[in-house]
Structure formats: structure tokens, C-alpha cells
Image 1: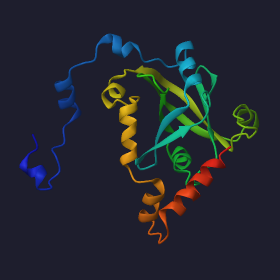
Image 2: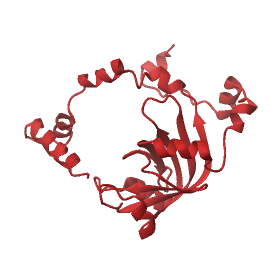
Image 3: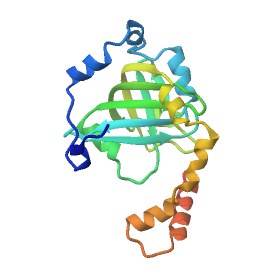
Length: 213
């Protein structure tokens, strides 16, 4: 139930972690045991089949950012059991994630495989490299990556599929709801105050997408 204070604009009560733990209880030993400090053959296989990940970083003040990364399955390379390499390809040039990594090397990754309920999570420390041998391994359509993000693995584990089941993420009926959203061109035109036809902006975005490879 929503309190009257919340309805009037006051912030909801802050709950301490001690209260959280008291309410949730302790995780079972089997859950704790699933966390490993290196990539094994099962997690390696998942990474090799994943075409998409969400990458969480934060700046020196702790302000977080979560960035989508995607390419052909296996675009993230396992250099060894404790090291991953993520290609950085042409984008909007904001470089939010790269700036954050320079200020604060903590990083969290969530790998997804379309159609699978479980996801793979990786936590660790990161830095940016321009090592030619690493970039060459990430060549796609004849083009190497511009830079690479090296992730030194601290934790790697599978996350259960409850969130994807509840969200019905892979259900075609849920995907059809995307048609109710305005086009990216319409959103960009309004947010940037552009006095031009949204279809023109949409065509510009599509032209940029076609230049990726």
C-alpha cells in the first residue's frame, strides 16, 4: 500500500541493509557456491554464444552508468580464465563507459543469449587497451575494434531466469508491444527541439546503423 506521505511527494522511507537481510533471510549455501572467480567451460560457452551484454560502470563520485553492447555471438573474447576482452566499436563518441573506467575500474557485466531464461553475470576490474594483437582478434567484417575493454574477472556466475520469465522477454506477444512506442526519430526530434520531420531523423539514424559494418 502506498502511504499518504508518498502520494504527497515525500520520499519513501530508506531501509537499511540490516532490515533487508532480516526480511529476506540468508541465502542457501548452494546459492553462494555458484559464484566462481574464473571462467570455466560452461561460462566460456555462454560468453561464446552471447550477442549482447549490459555493462555497468561508475565514475569517481560513484554515479553509475549502464551501457548496452552487442555484436555477432562471441564478440567478447575470453583471453584466459580470468580475463575478458570487449571490443569498443564506432558509436556516439560520448565514451561514458571508457571515462568511468579511467576514473573507477569496477565493472559489472550481464550476458544474454536470445531465447534463454538464465543470464551470466561477471564482476571485476577493467581498463582500456589498444594492444594490436587483442584488437585483431575482434575483427568483424574485416574491421578491427578501435579499442578494447579488458576485464579482470573477480566473480562469475549464472543468474536464475525468474526476471526473464516474469518479464516475458522472449514472448512474441510481449515484443509486439514495441509497436506502441513512438519511433526513435520522433523521440530524438522532440527531445533535441529539432523543427524537422521526425521521418528525416529516423532516416539519419537508419543510415548510421547501416554504416556499422
